[in-house]
Image 1 (cartoon, rainbow, N blue to C red):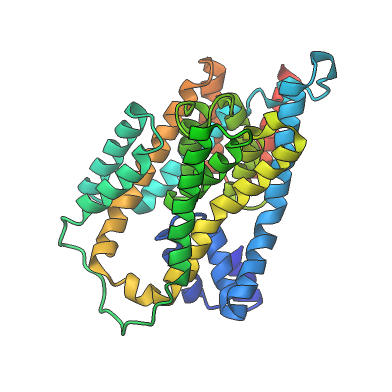
Image 2: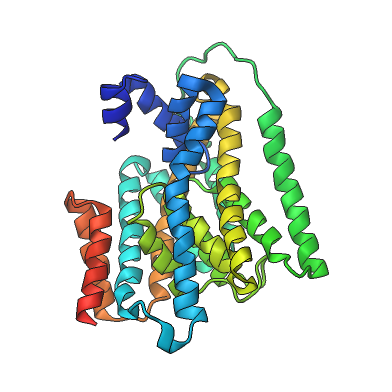
Length: 380
């Protein structure tokens, strides 16, 4: 779509530039599609236009998923059984369907990221570690270890370095300062048991996710699962989000136009839902801002020195290992999430059919989601 619109129709950028932008965004944490759109706007109007573009790009999906958090809470959690007007069976196949989406994402990423014996080993090791050590901190540890391991190879080297460019450190300092302050405030809220301290936890959680997530919105899923579903002993106390709610939201975000990262609006809203509708809206806003802010600050810092960065041998080699680890994490998330569903052969069939439709056909993802919604409505 970007090629057709920005290259062929509008001629805002060249095809080479678009591919280079996309490659650069793969090196940064956060939503690569969002960052690519921002870079196109940045070329035309600088940081102000890029910021406006970010808001326009994120708003529709974030708004819809925020509304969906109210639907899930008030109809499935807060309302009395006689007032649940939305049929529960509508979402019968959404959870196994979402596992099929996760497996498809991992399979597609394997094509570009798993090319050598070393990257295969990193992928398998990351898969095993994610399944065995169910902690949010396993992800940054895996990324650091994988980047280090892939640097032992001296066979692949970058091209000739370009003349270094001037670095503007303001965005990097802002990124680090917010990270530290968010962690301190979250810890204070936990220790002193502030009445509405969860909102600080929500900001810290999603800011951390946005700072360390590589591989798009699919890699967010296992992190949110461990933090909000299994993470009662971490920053967010129970009750937060159930595995069924998380999987339902992940399935629905596939049918929503916009970045998969907009699922954070849904999860942030549910995490604050027990405090009332005002706090639920605030949870949607805080989670959305927090998850997109780190990647935006890093984009504005790193892009001016991209020509230097992509030719730095340590980073060049580390990216191979990091990308391989991400594939393993995403495969693991599919396994973990399937384990959270009641095992039935019908669920396994839904996973397989969803994967095959995505991998072997050109049916748009939203139509697949609508199809499973209708199947659940008619067959249950």
